[in-house]
Image (cartoon, rainbow over all chains, first blue to last red; front, side, top):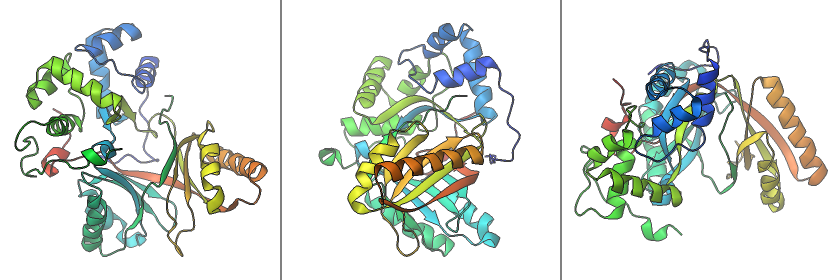
Length: 159
Length: 194
């Protein structure tokens, strides 16, 4: 999987791409032919919707298309975590951390704690257990920042 | 609230699609998650394909997915943009050290501001990390995000004098991974793509 960076050249998006991205951050129709519904709303045909979505995923303009799960609602857990990674070791630690399927996202950030990632596990106990396995793999401490309270969540960015 | 559904059925990680034993609701939902967590198939009737994979009729699958949406097991269905690629090149995680007595009030207050896309209270990790409030701010440049965070700091100072002891902003400089949730074993972590 390619790595998207702040320095990478952003692909050119046309108006229809932007309209599609914006529409698909809202409600996706839960029907048998959802792309046909989206196509009508955009004024293009169903095949074009599918082709554009495939291209946007291939270009990594979209990182995912599908249901987003709140694993907590069926007994699982998410947890933010961070590591202070020595610069010289950054690529090795990235590879080791990313190799864990429980690591859902991982970001490099400009701080002494320079690697921030989200763990997703099927049980609450899985978070601490995974953190220990990561610590054993990389030889560095993992700080866990469980969500104690959520005040607001809306991830919708206009393209 | 979720304590009574807190146990997922045990499963064999080498066989992520197979739920053991009888098809209880949780086992079916788990199969739906495993079948769709890497994305919906890009075909005219994506749910038909998912239904075949999990062994349900498409009507029953749609009914279950609707139920999962209503209960919040599915937050939403749709696209996750790479925010760099759509022009939001500045992704600032603002972190705040707020006195404990005020943290919930300040959290509600800044969570409601337009610039903030997520806002959470989290534990401090002293001495390394004094911050207990996290608010994500996205913008088209670091300066824009810094300005928004400065504005937020001003509003906190006005509305909650003395509540915030310090703050920082951590900008992301690379997305190292962004696959999302993956349960059911490593075999499923490969994106389904021709």
